[in-house]
Length: 89
Image 1: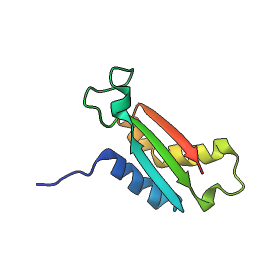
Image 2: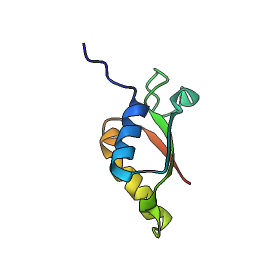
Image 3: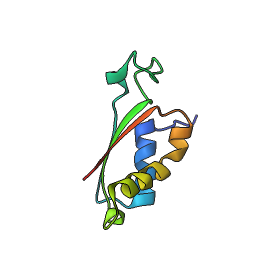
Image 4: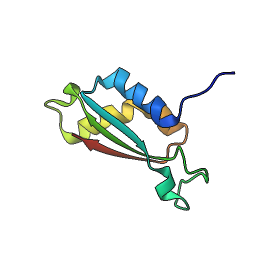
């Protein structure tokens, strides 16, 4: 039997591999959005907050920094992540 890691952990691994962050935190805030648009009724896997610092952000405008994060997580967004809050540190 193969156990799939929680979505937050999968997203963390994707960001770590792509952006080589000096700080990274991925929080699943789905339970806080129960009953809201995009919630799937499980309290997991729809609303996330990413707190990240990466040397790849140096010299980049905020929109470019966010684009790097979105690009790294595109497969998750395509698969049904409804909301992504990004905090660049």
